[in-house]
Length: 148
Image 1 (cartoon, rainbow, N blue to C red):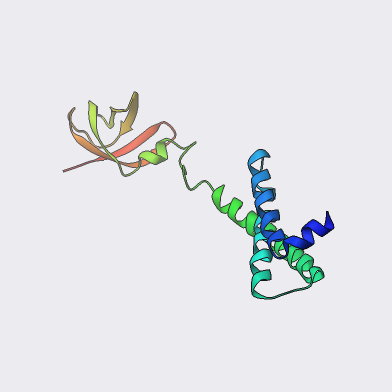
Image 2 (cartoon, one colour; image 1 turned 60 degrees about the horizontal axis):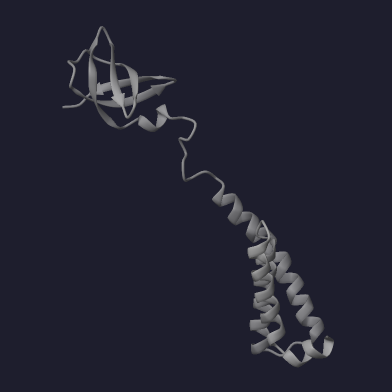
């Protein structure tokens, strides 16, 4: 086995990288991908310089260890929730949007239909059909201003 690996020369790291990335497809998580990436880096560097096998192992260990903080940083950035910042704050997502009054605002309260939901709105008196802009959200109540 050692003879086979030695006969592969610098290609053994690239093959190891392919095997690790291939195994990543079969296992949950993204751990083996980073080890595979480290093996690819060692293999690429082995073609540029001719390190000893001890140096190659050391480079692999360093690249694999360096991959952990990189992976954590990328995972943290991805899970920061930039895709849906208003997921649990639906009313806040409506601030700045313009809707048509379904029922007039009389004595400061009226309603608008937003998708399949009727929302209670507060604002200056306005007839039904007027365009209003949501300026504030407080729980299930929206504060609106009339649009010209």
